[in-house]
Image (tube, rainbow, N blue to C red):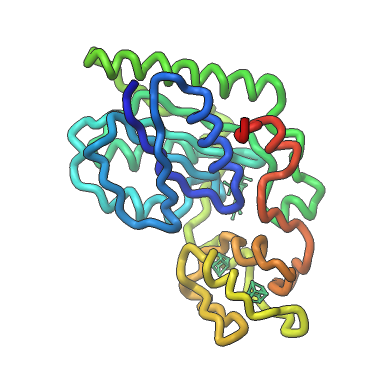
Amino acid sequence: MIKGIICFYSGSGNTKTACQYIAKKVTNIQFDFFDITVNKTPVFKAYDIIGFATFADFGGPPYLMQQFIEKFDDMENKYAFVFNTFGFIGGKTLKVLGKWVKKRGFKIIAGHSLHTPENYPPMIAKGMANLKAPNKKEMKCFNDFITKLDKLAILVQEKKNIKEKRINVSLFNMLIPTHSRKQASKDMGNKFVDESLCNECKICEEVCPYDAIVCDPIPVFDENKCYGCWACYHHCPKKAIYTKKFNGVGNYPKPSKEFMEKFDINK
Ligand SMILES: Cc1cc2nc3c(=O)[nH]c(=O)nc-3n(C[C@H](O)[C@H](O)[C@H](O)COP(=O)(O)O)c2cc1C
Ligand code: SF4
Ligand code: SF4
């Protein structure tokens, strides 16, 4: 058995759940997890393979993942795999993630994108929650990817030479434009707080991955630091945070029941 670590960014738990499923299904890799929103710098020395997992964020990987990956020095061909979830169309997410990882000197040997329920409030509000995702075919492809990863682990253990995997996405996905990292925040617009609902719990401050919120005692938003990830909106237990267009609709604070049942990670 080899040792692996999955560095993940998961705003509402879909990606985290999928990573836990990967770890549950493989038999040749013992995985640890590294949540990049909580911890800053992992030590990779003890691991044979590193996974990078995130969600599609306007057609590409989120800025937080870029900041995380850019910190590493040359990884001297350490084995890696890339993985992303998406709610509607993942665009170039996997390809760009692969590019960033390769640039740090990792040798990518596997990659996969998984269709999951949507967590972008404006899409959910339009009735596009995709709660049935992944469908049977998508689930089979995901399981095939895990089987392949498991087989590659044997080759890693036997110190066999493994061919680098070129990470590509379909032509259709290539045509999806990637937003500039600040455009997401502009699209979301300014955030407001319904003071009659806010209980001053500070959860919004804790979940903001870009340190854009200070509770004093109700949240004050630094719109210049905000990347429009909607985490504060999703996770406020009182639904006290709202924007000009969205108030109390499309909240997805954790993976849907249907999604959790499919992955059954507690068994
Ligand atoms: C700000 C934001 C942007 C998103 N952009 C995309 C996108 O471009 N394409 C897509 O298919 N899904 C998009 N989604 C949906 C998520 O990628 C998808 O629901 C994912 O499974 C969420 O994973 P998580 O629960 O690990 O955060 C976006 C979600 C958010 C919050
Ligand atoms: S999470 Fe919601 S209730 Fe808690 S401090 Fe923030 S706005 Fe107020
Ligand atoms: S303020 Fe809210 S939307 Fe902006 S980055 Fe923080 S959690 Fe995300």
